[in-house]
Length: 344
Image 1 (cartoon, rainbow, N blue to C red):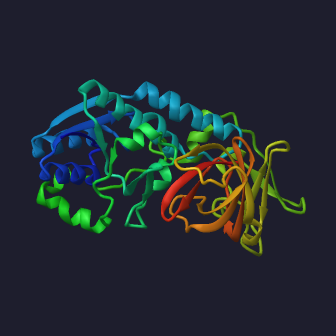
Image 2 (tube, rainbow, N blue to C red):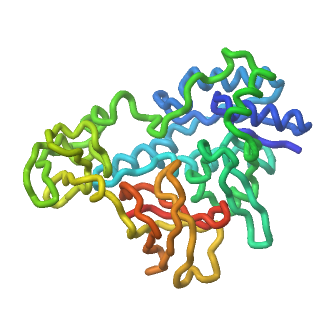
Image 3 (tube, one colour):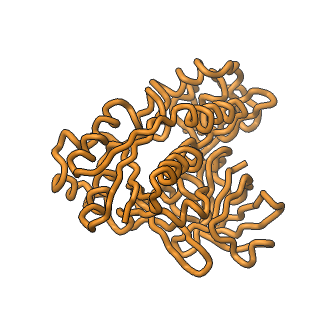
């Protein structure tokens, strides 16, 4: 069977390709080139991916995705930042760039299945295909994959689904020398050069304004709201007798609002732009699920109320810290993704 493997030049995708080849599959490596500056696919990563494929004796293809990446990820990211939200570009990169790019190559080469080095799993049932959490909870990447379509989920393989990161790292030298293995993990903002503050200054005409407490007391000046995110404590530039956190960003008055940590706790919020992998029979009104509102955060039990066709209200059984507009919230049942949306 022919299987395309998305090759990033990292350990995880390299080991995934090696494991599939050991099973006797016909493996084809594909590296998607996003941008000249992206840490996910810089020149070193591309060269390493090509060398890994040569080491395994498998075919390798490089696909230029720079225009798609710019239009589908980078530009929407800065537009969302202008609106005062904190977007998660990895979510939309997986939906619109990575898997779509691999699917296009699969169509051209007449290949049915696509594999990646994600730490996630697949559950197939009469109700369809759902992505589930990986065994390694510290590396579980299912959170980033809730927006994948039914077609994509039907063609996905995750060779690392049942493995821990430590196992994968220990396995890698079986096939690859140290110079063929990435030394660093890719970063969420892979296209940002330098500090996020410098990039905000370069991309946005963000005006400085007042930093205020919840009661309206002015305590300082901010450099532009886009440089801050909910729950942030460091780099605020204010002196106070107690620790202060960013509680909200008031776009209408250009004020950065600070408060205590307890002021950043939420038991209630809304989400829109919904995507579903499996809709519970009760989803027309309300249903219970485990909710993850930030990558690697602990799942919290919640009731999800359907308040419109593309909007839900999430009521949590325990408060969580720094629920942030623009970030993704993902709903799970028995470790499997039900769906998710964008926090508003």
